[in-house]
Amino acid sequence: MARPRILAADHDPEVRRHLPLLIGGRFSSNLLLRYPAPFLGVIATGLGTSVGVMGLALSAGEFAGLAAPAVGRAADRRGARTAMSVGLSLVTVGALMAAAAPVVVVFAVAMVVVQLSKVSFDAATTSWIADRVPFRRRAEVTGLVETSWALALLVGIPSLGLLVDRAGWRWGFVVIAVLCGLAAVGVRRRIPPSTGHGGGELHPDALLDEALGGPAGPAVTAAVADAPPAEPGRAWWRMPARSALTLACVALLMGAVQLVVVVEGVWFEDAFGFSTARIGGAVLFIGIAELIGSLGSSRLTDRVGKRRSMVLGALVMMPAMASLGLVGSHAAVGIAVVAVGTLGFEYALVSAFPLVAELDTAARGTMFTFMLAAGTAMRGVADAVGATLYDRGGIGVVGLTSAALVAVVLVLLAVVVREPVRA
Picture 1 (cartoon, rainbow, N blue to C red):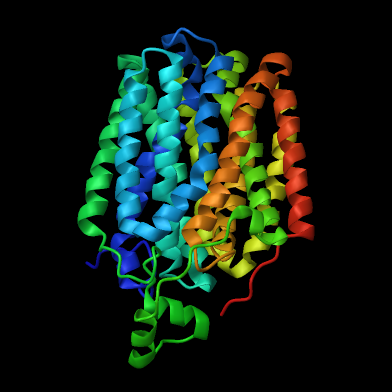
Picture 2 (picture 1 turned 135 degrees about the vertical axis):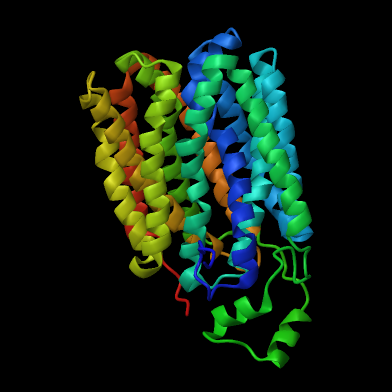
């Protein structure tokens, strides 16, 4: 019996061969990012601090993302394999620091290390894919890679919830560190080194197929292979206004969902009386919604259109977030509403990635990290604001604030964002 493929057979063989490894690396590092929020109260108690202070600690890590463009430029220059393996190795270090943190300040430093190193891995992964998959089919691949974000919540968090119940929150970080370390070794050993053509490791056939709409001949391929490296992208202050506003659109979307994510675990405890283990179980349903959003993008976005898909996702997300204050003590309804909003967000976000990669095709890693910088800054604000709003006004105020940000995103999508014309 033939082994089932997760990607169509007519994609680049190198992409099909290494995609499971990249998904595994993203799963491990995404699990590290997703782990603190559902167990924020438990970690806060362990470190002898409040939920509000823990929100500030997570916010410090998010604001480290402002340095992401510098990391992206390094990834463009050094090559994808180096950026991915070094990034995952440092993610491992950050996880171990968090596990051993004696006080909240050390925990915050660990989150800074994690954010900066994960930027390197994520940017290099996106650039590696964009250089090998034509724009017209890129959402099919990026959607599959982004299922790792949902799987981290769907599979990883419930499993870690059981571990936290029995052994404590520190052991969750230790397990994640082991997974990230194994992924770093796998990337270093299996992904081929840079083949020149700049840090993005451009694949000549994929590039010409994208540009010309058909396979390139050997002579043309050789000419491209001998071309000088592409010049890294421009600084953010020299970026076209439309590109900057497109990145702002994605960042606002990230901030809108983070307002809810940072407090959902505490909300489940306060409103529904959930234990740590039951919080882990509740996020199963949210993880399923995220998985549907990512797979939906993989299957639909290339046909529907990237920009239109972002609009559809935002239209699903906005009313869900606005209605959180109406849930009351109905746990099933609360989980369902968060799941619907998360589905819309995930579909919109994954649909945005191919658009971002086309804002500057000579420096895709840099552009992706501009997006991460803006997004992590917004998430940093959202971590602090979301925790504060929840303390003062409850989940209803948090949900309405989230919905208002999504409304701004819809305006930007209608007025500013445009989809490039590609074969």
